Length: 224
Length: 322
Image (tube, rainbow over all chains, first blue to last red; front, side):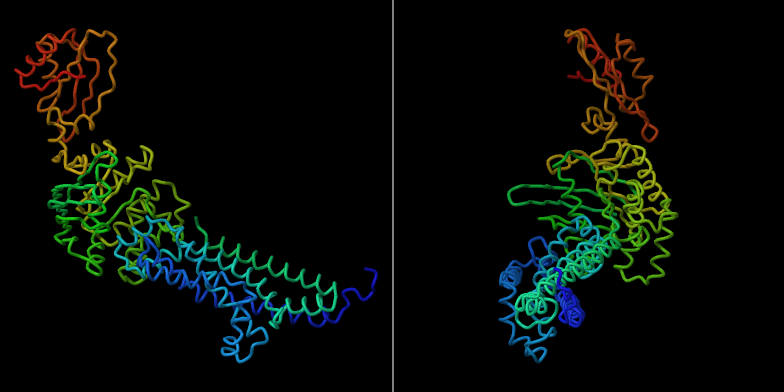
């Protein structure tokens, strides 16, 4: 601890900032894409489920099966399995852009399940009221389910985003870039305890800030 | 205009509704009463097309709902306003946007629907609450918003499902007053499902009693109440409970149906039952007629019989009460 070079380490002073930016970029992109694709998938799951607007047991079981398979594969294995696909999409299997592909694929079913559960919280009475006004299923979804479940949907996106931060670190183990890669290649493989500690501190900060923003947003749209 | 013909609804083995015939003319307030499980909820779900009847027809404003589905049903529903027990406002929208919602669904332009919603909130006495969210309103205010919303698409028919069951008595009176004024000012036809007799007494022109999925009694309120021995009359004008301290004495219940209080009192006195023998009584004036019942105590079964036949001779209905 009396080492004068403690924390005065090029891995921290030069690489920390770009790595943190990469982690943020990966998290932001994959959260955005997961919401973009996961929301419709979650709505589809929900409407196809028993008692849904467009209940269809076969569709529900197929969707459910796909979602559960993806969710049950450990993420580190999912990344490796998706290397060819990532290369096909972004042209390379390395770097944060390639990681975003796997992160998104991993997060879509995760978010979709959370969406399904959030929509289930909307009371039956509100749906009947809208149907009685002559609303179509699409109108019920857009004008009742989504706005009424919005605090829950934002909460779910926050949980997904925080989970994605830890996934980015895992992706670092297979050349994904970001703080995870820095912590593994310097903190772990080169025994630089200061780099490891610095990475952990920044990761904790990022998660704290995401949670803070998510809570604020959810509260801002919650009028219950 | 609401017209039900031979409506029948079966869930598996259970018969929920059987042979329901009902017709509510335009501009009338009709009440449907019955205990829990009598079929009230199923009836209203059939009326709104949320449930399709096993057989029979439901027609509202001349449109047969039983033959409709998809776009046709959605169109037909727009001509029905619905008021719910739990109001079912969107928590994420202000009072104004909630009232405008039916118009948004119908595709009315934004400026127009918001202006209309403002006018309706004004009408129900909430002109200063347009920007409040439901969580900022009291139960009675929420129900007013619910009623304003039900009126937004200018329906000819208003269906109210237990509209006051979650409200206290003062608020109930205000909401019922509002519903009555809607009928008086807009000529709207109102169907109220309730388990509260006070609601029926307060605002209904006609009433139907449902029991075990069948119509047990139906007719104009004054007629139904005036009918001697009617179950509905007993529920609508309840007597306070009477305790008999002397086991030997009997009770005779005299109906005011078709007559009035002075006539009954005179006849009873002539038959040997003085006013002191009245243990309980309930008299109300409904549509200008006195209705209600009196309970006399008599000393023996013979005296009870004598009193009943003496009153009958005067055209007054009486029976021995348990």
